Amino acid sequence: MNVILLDDRDFTDTGTVRLSGRRVQHLNQVLACAPGDELAVGRVNGKLGRATVTKISARSAELADVVLDGDPPPPLPLSLVLALPRPVVMNRLLAAVTSLGVKRIFLVHSRRVEKSYWQSPVLAPENIDQQLRLGLEQAVDTVLPEVRMSKRFKPFVEDELPGLIKNGPAWLAHPGDGVSVPERTGPSAMLIIGPEGGFIPYEVERFDELGVSRLSLGPRILRVETAVHVAVAKVGGLFK
Figure 1 (cartoon, helix red, strand yellow):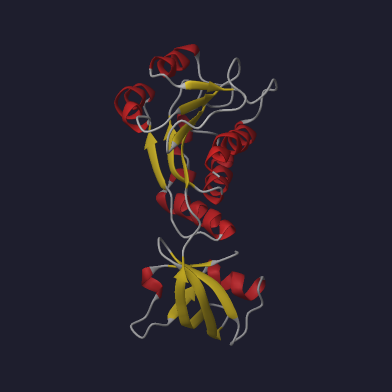
Figure 2 (figure 1 turned 90 degrees about the horizontal axis):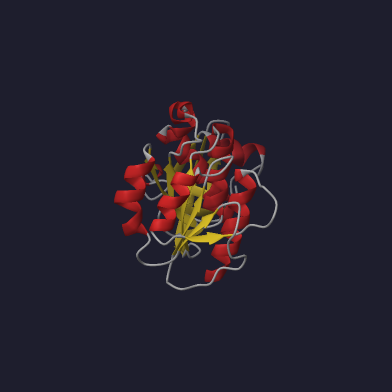
């Protein structure tokens, strides 16, 4: 953890903070904290700042002198539409794209997505929340991304996607022809990445009909996890 995230429920009536669980384990096992140590903290969906450890044990910790006066890093104005990947990859991607500053993540179905993936415990709200927090802790950020799910491809593309792409370009990272260097043509952008094996032709045609542009990631076929990092770097770099 590069920052200790604080929830509203952690604050007492006297303004101190009480921690438990994973955060206390980190304070003990990684930071080897003792009373008097100062920590980097941030209130979830709020400000960054500092706090001082006043008490700590194996199961709990208390912080005082909490000062929250710093802004989190600016969000990346890039939304990510991702065909639901394998569960083991999903966990890593949620944390990774959160650390890169993505604040809107849409998990969608595709023909090549195994239906069983939608039953995975990685999609449980508590697991998604934990992965997002891991990403925020890595990046010293406080603002939780929005994660939405659509288990049916056609309703998402026909009913939701048109409104989502009206304020900026949308890029489909798909094997084949496409621009290597995208151009910034609006205040925000959307990146669409398919499953292992890519979107099927029918799905690609639906994106084409909406005016979604093609983004080339090079001549090699990449795993989803690698493709996401490369694509976010390409499109997200337009806003830095």
